Length: 546
Ligand code: C2O
Ligand code: CU
Ligand code: CU
Image (cartoon, rainbow, N blue to C red; front, side, top):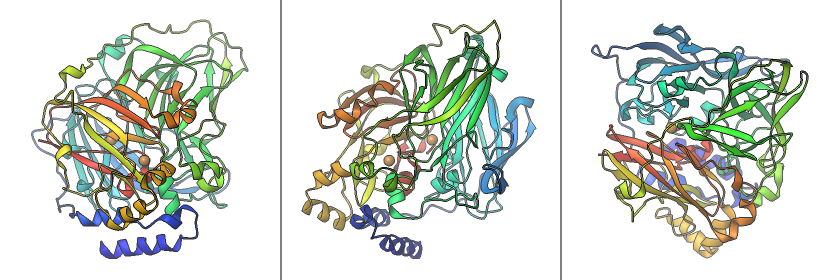
């Protein structure tokens, strides 16, 4: 481990010519070393004889090659799966895509998944959005070596919704997801089925990612410190693993299940002809009522359930989903320097298309949008264990480190505020903690004081999609510091505050309060930034539910 850190350290030193990297003195890594505990050596979980699986499949993580751009194939890492028990529609391939098969589960099913690591490196899979026992959640401590098999067994407790499965190994999540390891996992339940929403060909997954390719069509990934500080951005938008995605539709209503599967890129989604976006669901399933928005912000890890009604449109007409201009999600210096600083020709916050829907068939009948979608059991603040004392999730950003609660990730390093009573409902406040936050890293803090920590912190301030494992949460309030309102005005109408979330975009200067239950399962449940480069830099902690 120590030698690996030295190699990284040398690599970062080598980048010092690069603007921001000049400030980098990597105390986040030093911090991590301080309290660092090795992950325990656990032998991979095996199938238990008394678990009667309704659904069982083998899930393989492997290397492969797919056609993405014209010409040469691209080397990727990807999931593939083989159903052993259960309904035939449990697994649906996305033809020709590196994305894993769509996994379709039903609430109440007992599921066994045999994860085969056929990669040349260790990995583990996390079911982002699912409420499963701690030892089935894909915590990095359960990572398996090449050739090993890890058996997951859980019951589907979630309500209907779109979830994600992706790797979660220590410090290698971003790289593995970027190279293709990700897929969507749908849960269905009776409440949703009774609504008779558009389904089959009329329900379409839209997984949005950005990638960068070299002139031989091979993926380029983060090579310097700066790519990790601001996150890695591609210059090519892929939908369901394809560039220039076209969706042929009939003139009727569709249900688009949108997932931002990008490592770091944040989108401001809108229809190009000014049609508002009708949102019927988010991360944790259906909203109670549809919400109509001029545009919707979608950060890495977030999902949107969109009602897209093409009825009345003529055959041959097109509607383009775009990302519209916005500002304020990147550190000011990086933003001012545009694409060059982000290492991409497609700067975050610029204006570009995501995909085109083309009406190819005129039909007369269509589904009607229901007024009432679902009933959500919201928790009032008064029902939380701590109505006057929210648990902190403190974001600290400095040129030296991206931390949560003053620390970089370390195993078995739970602080008092990260210890949570089983079956409690907690009020949590996510906020930016400039300057004052870092309790570790003597060198870093010293430097910050010299330079006037607050100013430096402000300069590095950026948006972070904060994700909490386990049960979804509700958003109680968002408040923005007066210094940031100008940028915030470019995004503020794009947040869905109703419904249940597991990932929330926290803008610079913003404080977000959430209420989250911690029911059923004890153990370690992670929370982290879903900017995957930040996550791997250590912007991640564990809650210990006891
Ligand atoms: Cu989608 Cu802990 O991750
Ligand atoms: Cu997760
Ligand atoms: Cu972040």
